[in-house]
Image (cartoon, rainbow, N blue to C red):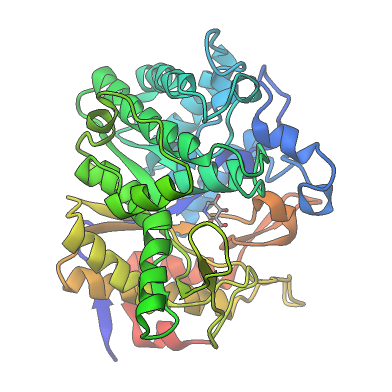
Length: 453
Ligand code: IFM
């Protein structure tokens, strides 16, 4: 039986985000965020679901730490709700908000779990959106001020920081498609993307100024693009999509410039990022690590009828999750090798990987999720292959520790390795959690685990 051993210092973790798990949206001085407002707007979120009660983690965090400890996780990635710290996004600091995360960090460290803190996982304080949101340059400066406050309070104990989670989503789902908060359609998404990146660079400097020994990075979501055919037109379309989704963030961060082909295309559409002197230098400050969120690939064909970047998605035959995302672990391996080859990050972490399936509690009281076990096992095998090929991948965080609020899908999509009964808040580790506990304990994956259904 083939056994895939991971490197001795490989870090295993589970990931969550504040708005998706905390609940308690009006407690202890927390301000309104764009997701509170979005959820309260009829028709935006499935079934009218909101950030309450979510997993009630704000009150149950001690139990959740115990849960992670029982599963053997040595690391936990969570995000901080900006509007708990600064209810209006800037200015007055809410001590109760800082205290909450302070206790959480102490609890994690006492349990032997290393905290990885994300500063921004999509929940912009509504007051900042009212003042222009991410399309406004000032939001980047406000983000750096918030980073400074949090780093000065937690940076003596938190050594791993992620500035932004998935800026592509914040910019394009928030300000172009309108599928996410704040729900602006066909708004200034390129300006939002630029100010998110600028905010990242400024926050990185603030984190390092507060504590010189921190390790700071950013998490991007990647969608590797395969052409639908060998035709030149489809190949060019896949490259445009790659520019739109992947290179638009990677190139500024690692090459200090937006990709020239994309700048030219956007210029034809009358659009350009609002770059000012020195921005690109700030954005390209060296990163201690790159966080990789990977769920699926895209298969792209040329579509001259489509507006904008003239591409369309093709839905290949294959296996799909409940999100209708294709299961394609080979693309994760190729993505990691490509990042290593083209951008050479010193360290990579998978900061999210996982799958939604319609889980149910079975009559024996367990939650049997063989598809998720297989999904995770096959993606871990892809990580292992990438490491063997020389990629400096140092850890894997599963998305997500527990079922939670899946944005516009509300509570209808379960990504957890732990099942949450929202009516009682009972947590039930699914088979995938028990499987990961074994993998973590052995620091290895076996063929049997990969193909168990
Ligand atoms: O739930 C989200 C998470 O907040 C960001 N990355 C993708 C996940 C699944 O959609």
